[in-house]
Amino acid sequence: MKGSVRVLVFTKRLRYELNLHRNITIIQGDSASGKTTMIQIIGDYLSRRAGPGTEVVCDRKCVVLSGDDESALAQLSVQKNAVVFVDEQERFLYSKSFAKAVLESDCYFVFITRDSLNMLPYSVNEIYYLKNSGYYQNTRQIYNSMHQVYPEINVTDKSVPAMVLTEDSNAGYEMFQAVCQDMEIICESAGGKSNVAKYILAHKEDQILAIVDGAAFGADMQSVMHALEMSRHSHVWTPESFEYLILQSSIVQAEGLGEILSQPGEFIESGEYPSWERYFTHLLESMTKNTIYAYSKRRLNPNYLTKGNIGKLKKIMMEALQK
Image (cartoon, rainbow, N blue to C red; front, top):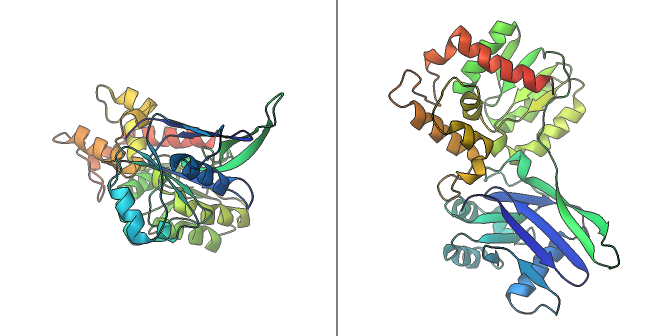
């Protein structure tokens, strides 16, 4: 499944509106915020237990999974191109077997949970909380819509950081190390995305710009935001991925690339790519195959490290710093 999917849930008293853009959407919220109520309404409607005036509107089949791990996997195995809802009370949501099934599925998933799902790669921009937007005029219907928890996270300090921190030590680190050398600042690797928050906390007095692959960093974002609250000067930048930045920089040019970058969700099939980061990696690899820019994630092709190409990445980074 690909593209955006809209889900409307109605009762005589409540209305929910969800706009799903990727294969995994996380909905958070405090107790009594209406998260579980929404799941119950959808479940009741689908099982024909709902009262009059209840309706679920979506151009895709909607499914609510419940039960034990084996039952949930069996239910999911027969779903194709559906929108699948799971509440945080279902323990299978946190199992390895369910995570594996999600990554192999072509469905879209809506997970109601306040906990991080560390086994799944989901975007920092697809974590939402439900917010009561008041009452419709002349009715008593409460309107609930989704609001991003981390809306398009960017740095807010226009000064140049003293240090850049990358997730790992592969191609992205090599490129940013060259950019930082040109800017005469330090570049370090956290050695994995789960270490980014730890690194920031261990260097609370430093001015760090952490650069992470936003398309798959959702599970680690809460710990990083906590670390940033403890730090006096650090910030985080969450582009979709390093490969996305390369494609955006015009180092690589190909017909139709601009359209893909402007609306990637219309091109990314969830059954083939569990995260947009995977898609952009594949896209860059396929577009540069048998060219001087043949891309490998493990080790950066030296042709990317020319002065001109370093300047293009530096320009994108500086634009993010100035937003």
